[in-house]
Image 1 (cartoon, rainbow, N blue to C red):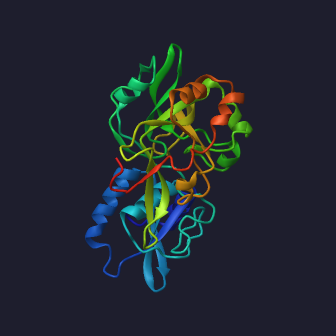
Image 2 (image 1 turned 90 degrees about the vertical axis):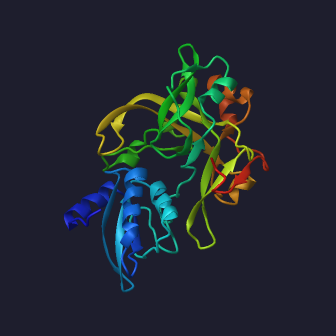
Amino acid sequence: MSRRSTPQAQLDEKAFPVRIRVRVPEAGFGTQMGPLRDWLERRVGRGDYAWHAGGRVGGADAVAIYFRDAVPAAAFLAAFPLELADGTVDEAYSSPDHPFGRREDPAMCNLYSMTKGQEAIRRIVDGLTDRAGNLPALDEIYPDHEAPIVRNGPDGPELVRARWGMPKPTFALKGKNVDSGVTNVRNTGSPHWRRWLGPEHRCLVPWTAFSEPGRDAEGRFQPIWFALGEDQPLAFFAGITVSGWTSVRKIREGEVTADLHAFLTTEPNAEVAKVHPKAMPVILRDPAEWATWLSAPWEEAWKLQRPLPDGSLSILSEAAQG
């Protein structure tokens, strides 16, 4: 994570719109530098972040770390409780008072888990054809990661893998050469989403827990996990999918063709609203709802875009998740 030249920093500011600035400890990062570097390489990936000198803030040196979106940035701060430095002015403005708060809705349901395994999916979805290969337990599913979905196949429902994040609208890609995808879809009246609302593009997204961005007693980011019960039973989000979409998802990959998915959101119920008052995923709990979502006309299926009844979700501690 060497400090780069100013021209390189200017290029990275365009490629990585989310910037956080942290104060350098008085004694430097020392032995913490190794874990910082390892975490970024392992959890974010080489080529998907940048690190630069961040000037001086309040008499202390700072470093600026750039990410493609707010989710890995928030996860980084959760993993390393570093002191934020004020003065950040980029798209997802970050400061001690307003981390990720100016123009970005931070990490809104951009982290979920699926730990039950594909056999659990096969047991509850009638006539399912499994084309997903050998799926491991997925304790943490982040945007653009591959995850299982159930979609309509030529011979009935099929289990496959798809990258999390549907194509962004054209206006959101203006001036950009990377489409990292949209993970949460709320406005189904938009022409951009209407083309993918028919049964041929609907899917079920299996999950066992999902998180919303909360804060600990010191104000640091901490994911708050929700499930349908302490035992985290299998359920599905109401999703949409597209097959064989060609785009540049990451600079280091170049152009790729991939199956993609996202899930719908709606108003939060009482439990989620305490943490995230804007939205929650659309959750489907029983076979009748699954069948309606996969096969019914939109005039009927859209009625499922509603919050769960209050009291339907359990709040898990971070340690209990997974």
